[in-house]
Length: 120
Image 1 (spheres, rainbow, N blue to C red):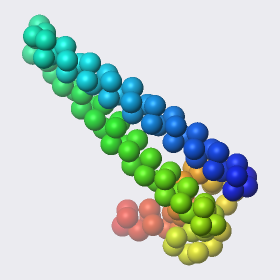
Image 2: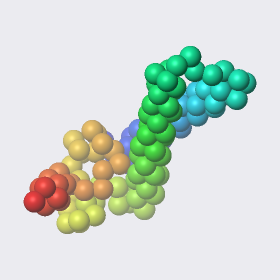
Image 3: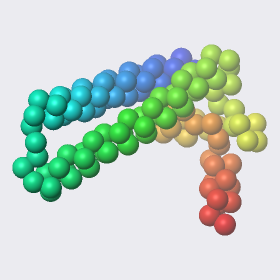
């Protein structure tokens, strides 16, 4: 995968996540509007379900916002010619890894090492 292909992939992912966030926000705003119009839950279970759904939406927004930040950073690194350089060892991030997770900052070896250190 060359830099141009990778940038197209990143921009497509960015567009998809942005659209997904908009849909989530519209859904959350629609739910809030219904509550504001006087719709009250029929029972505590329904209220708990509504609150859980809003929590899930917030979690999805947070996760997608973090991924968007990673994608924006990857696009910046790509523009600087550093898209396949591991931030830890400065070695090359493999094409296969970038194909799976194009916003990767670490090569597989460094990612595994950091994860295993965190488990200790």
